[in-house]
Length: 461
View 1: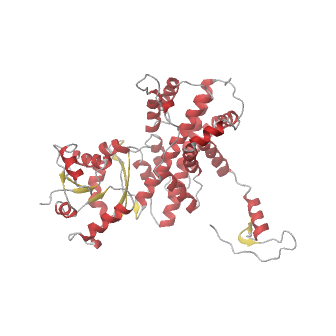
View 2: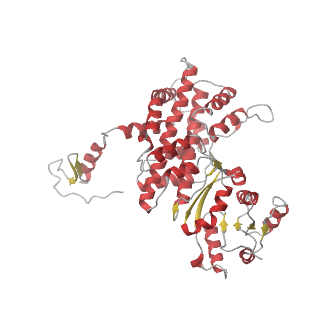
C-alpha cells in the first residue's frame, strides 16, 4: 500500500539524518540502499520507533510511494547515480518521460542534515511544487522562520550554486588559518589567547559558524591535558569541490583568485615531507620579536580577514553571474545568500548583508560596488595593508590575504599594465590589439620593420 511521502536512496550518515529530519517534520519516508541489509539495520536502530518504512528492492520502494512519487538519490556522484536512474526508468510505474529530475545541493554536514540543512534545488521546475513543502520544512530557518531553501534555477543550477558555496568555504577556512598563523607566529599568542580572540571576533561582523568552531578547536585539550591542535598533521585534505570551482572560474574567465589560492594552499600543505626538507635548506627573514602594539595589530588581522572575506564572496557571486549568462539561468542572488544564511558551513551574519545588497539592487554587478561593502572595505583598508606587509616581512605565507588585496587593487585601477601584454602578443605573434580611442577595431603593428602586416586570427580562450 502506498504510504510514503518520499523515498531516499543512500543510507550513509547524511542520508540517515535527512530521513530522521523529514520524519521529525511529519513526513513518512521510505528508506532504500543498494546493500539492503543497511535498510534493516537502520530500521532496527537509528529509525526505531519512527514512521520510517523500508524497502528491499526498487520495485517495493516504488510501490510504497504516494503519487506523484518523490525520490531522493543521496549517493556518490557519478556512476552510482547513473545506475540508479537507469533502474528507476525500468520500473513499470516510472517511465523515463515522467521523471522530473532535480539536482539539489545540501550543506550543513551531519548535524545540518539531521536538524536543518541549507538546500539548493535546481532542475525541472515542474517538480518544485511536489517537493517544496518537504524541502522547506526540513531546511534550516533564519529570521522570522524563513527557510534556507528555495528554487535556484534550471538544469544544474542547484549543484553549481552548491559548488560555489563549497569553494567559498575553502576560502573562508584558509583566511581563518592565515589569521591564526599571524597570531601564532607574529604575535606569539598562546592557544587560550587565540581562542579568546576568535570568540570576541564572533561578536563582530565576523559572526559565523567557522569562527565559532575555530575558537572551540583552539581551546580543545587532548586526554593528556595538552592542546590537540599542535599535534594534528598540517596536511589538508580535500574532496574536490574547491578545485571544481577554480576550474569553472578558469573555464568562464572569472578571476576567482581567492578560492584558487585556497585550493593551492591545501595542495602545498600536502607536500609535508618535501616541506620538512625545504625548511632545513631554504632561509627566510630573520625572526624578530614583535615590538608594535599587540592589541592594535590583532585588530589589523581581524580587519584583514573581514576585507578578504568580502573579496571572496564578491568573486563567488561574479562566478554565479557568469554561469547564469553562460547557461541562461535566472538566479536570485539575494535568495542564494539567504539560503546560505543558516544551516550550512559558511552560515554567518555577513550573508544577511549580501542579501540586503541584492535587495537594494538586483542587478548589482559586483558586491564591492554596493555602498555598504564599499565602505566596509575602505574602513578595513589600512589595517589590511599593515597585516599583509607585516606578514610578508616576517615570512608568513598568506596566499589568500595577499591575493584578495591584489584583486581589490586590480579591480579599482582604471588602467592596468595589460596594454604591455597586448603589445608583446602582437610583437611576437601578430595577435593584434585595440586602441583606447578605437575599441572593437583590431590593429597589428610591424614592430621590427620586417615582420610584415599580416595578423593572426584573434580568439579568446
